Length: 128
Image 1 (cartoon, helix red, strand yellow):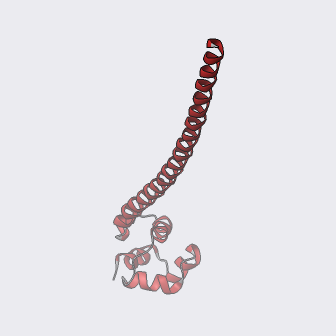
Image 2: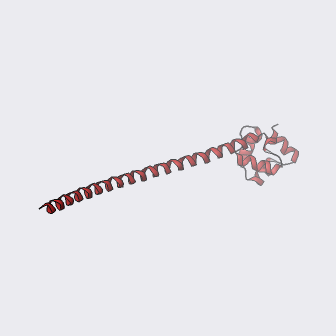
């Protein structure tokens, strides 16, 4: 007899009653009671709440910890992906700025050349 079956018997609950109250599918409940299946963290929480015991009492305590680690990892992966996208956007913006600066340098160089020419023309006109 599994822990879950012992607790159900102690509480006077049938598998069918647990399924009705929690929405757990009867085939899932049967496999849980036989120890053939581990519950998802959500199902483990539903059973714990209904039976008034902790996940550890059902033998599912490590599932909760694993779920928390998985959730934290998932959050971290999403943040890393967002940072990578932001870095790509920033790099693209930096390229745009550099290209604009290159264009400005060309305009400035052209303006300097024209000014030098104007100064030379002016100096020659003053010399004549």
